Length: 128
Image 1: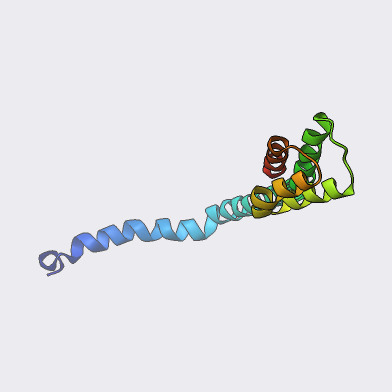
Image 2 (image 1 turned 30 degrees about the horizontal axis):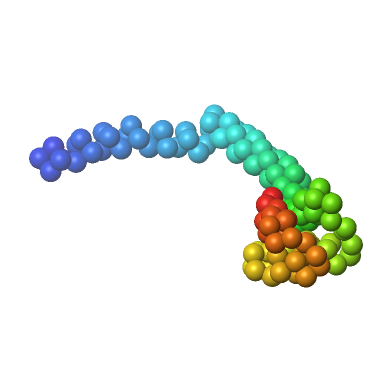
């Protein structure tokens, strides 16, 4: 009767699969799986810590300092006097894209910088 209904083949297939599933989660393979999970977790945590330690300082402080410096260097190379007002304009341009593209060139021109030099310095303030 089982052969007519098709159960004979299925019960044979289940008898082959069930021991494999049991061996996967118990017995001789359980320690290996647990060990691999622990190694993977340790590697993941280690990679995360290294990424955070390297990446966080680069994301937080470096871009604003570097771009402000580049803006000031452009003006210094073109023999402009660098004072607190020029430094403030370059710092604002490094922090705000809209200010760098719209207001920074005007502010530098008011301080006596030629239009082309002011535009060039403000563009450098946004590069990273």
